[in-house]
Amino acid sequence: MHLSEFKQYAKELLNIAMPIIMGNLGFILIAAGDVLIAGRHSTDTLAAISIATAISNCIITFGIGLVTSVSPVLSNYRGAKKSAKKYFYPTIRFAMFWAFVIMLAILAFVPLIDVMNFEAKLVPMIKEYMIITAFATFGGYLHAALKEYLQAFEIVLFPNLVTVFSVFLNILLNIILVFGFGPIPSLGVVGLAIASFIVRYFMGFALLIYCFKIMKFREYFNTKEYYKTLVKVGLPISFAVMIEFVAFNSIAVFMGQVSGVYAAAQNLVCTLTSISFMVPLAISNAIAVKVGFANGANNFVDLKRYAFIGMGIAVGFMACSSIVFASIPDFLVKLFTTDIDLIKISVPVIYVLACFQVFDGLQVSLAGIFKGLKRTKIVMITNFICFWLYFIPVGYTLAFKYNLMLLGFWCGLISAAILLCLILCIFLHKNLKEMRKSLNFISSDEF
Image (cartoon, rainbow, N blue to C red):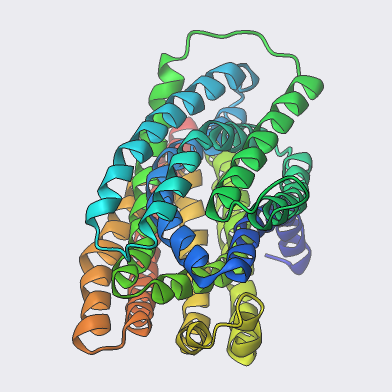
């Protein structure tokens, strides 16, 4: 492949990825804004939302994983010259059904907070935050579904501009509702939850209005096959994402039972890594769209080039990110808190996080390739093996048996990420080899 060809493929990927990067950064900066405001309010507030979001996100991501199947499925349809636009209303119905299910699941979990051995002062705050978050799922899922729908048509600028605007809206609402302003009293944790509620519905309805403005839609009810495909592709994605989220957020739950400051430290560290992770995640989304289109068109050359060029961009960015994290850990932590204990716990973990970054970028880009190929069961199974069967017992042992606490969990995460990348690379090589043989056979037969 010539340099000019490389630049062309990279440009096409980045044309999709750049607005998504902007939107993903906006999305995580909304969460970072919550952490920033909570940390400024009190360490207890930060600890409470850290535990609440750790639990809620594990439930929410299951349905979000199903919704993220929309863009690769519709991209494959477009690549195969099939109609995709008609699935607008079915996509919304699919998202709202799962939003309702997830809302009930979160509400059902709230009573269990009383028996999970968290610090007594944190329990009421955790429950309040989760209850309000449960009713925000409809806005969040509407936004996620429509963003995926538009992404399938490579319409990515406006949806991500909405997310960026929402960062500032969220911070403004947090300041007003958490600390109080004029007649509005200080609401603390409840204020954070209400701000998130308003922002999620704003983002969802903004995209809904935009879709009606740029396209005309007709109702379409013959959707059984579409829903079946979404579940077939999305269910493994959901389980894969949920497996990873449970693994990450179990750290906050385990450490929160020791002390709220450890849960706060985990949330702070996760916020930092999530900011950099949004870039390879956006590239992964772009890979899924372009690989999905090439897969639907049976274009093996384009498929392979988009996959490997995208992977190189993602890993290269995370390597640069690792250098930044390792260079200024104290500065990064102090952006969020002045609590001395919190700083002492978080800084050593940042050094470990710096090593973790590169493998995190590699695994998410590999996941994007398999998503575009509609072979998501592989990602689900490898995530289960590496994060549940390997990471949780290893991390728990390092944390509590060897008294490394939060640092022990992150050492376990690095080794799990390396194992995950190794397995996915082996499966990708095998799948590409099989696809090449299959396409060569078809070409020979036609000739």
